[in-house]
Length: 461
Image (cartoon, rainbow, N blue to C red; front, side, top):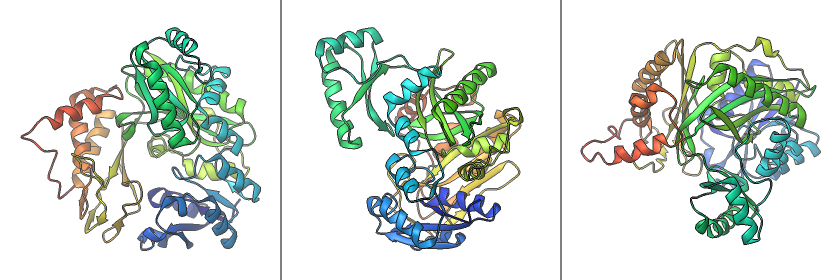
């Protein structure tokens, strides 16, 4: 087992990794930028090292300074968390070549699954159901492009092969718009991802976003740990996640979970991973795999009672998986609300100093954060300041527990989206379960039209 792990990340996920390491008696090295120099959470690490100025490309996103910090502190492994360099195949390769352990899958697997075309081919070969679409990059010949589009069927979605985060995607409703849409998406793909390659899939109009959590070791063992419904999204960014996914047949989930495990074994996957699907008309359709720990891993931990971060560390150190598939059970229902420092109406970021920070508690509540009163939310990074998790015997009880916890949460000095989450929980369609990925955007448009009502008092939230 590792003696020292460097955490190549910041904020809430850095704290989560520190806690897992403390339980395993592993020393931690936290890295921080100049913008995070005064952050109180850094005191939780055994050692903290400044790695550069605020801009991501000169600190948290710079492989060279991360590796230099690991060498200087004697770290034997690097945990990338999520975001930043967590799915950067080149960084993982450099970690491997430096003789350190990368707490995640091998670099060549990250590269394969980061290429959406290669990932889809691998999943089809493993029997994982996929969205109908092109087998490879779109042809440059206009006639061949139109023929392929007609075969897939309109509407279709043109996507960047190296894309992610909701960028590099464009819906095309008719053949006349296809050529221009492909050209624009290629430009975006080159700009954001460094590759102009794009492909196409059938556009599903009202799907749900449902994902399967897996964990694999270096000895060919793999398990799946249930599914999560992440359909409450704004601009392709998740706001609220839950498990189990309401109203989906358990046998169907099991069948897809088993295929995900088989795919992992086929491609030599190691560590935590998530298969993301669009679910529509009773069918799972694979869209991509996240080769890292997810923000919403907390709800899976709640219902399974399994520590996914500790498991990541153990398999990276060469240990066998700590559980068999028949030992994975799910109890109750769990939800996670992402608490962001942003205006709940305009969604503009709200950086600044937190002057009040009253956190919720209770038997069904977990609150993951790196913030406390007096801390500053920097303007340079993602606005998420906490994750609020509620776990209860039933979905209805989980909703009530979550709403009560949100009512207890009091933050001043910055704005948060607390009131938006309470409104989502009160929405009748959400309470019924099974909303699509477009539902929240539709509701937001309706709520903005209510000129006489605001989401909540913006000063406390």
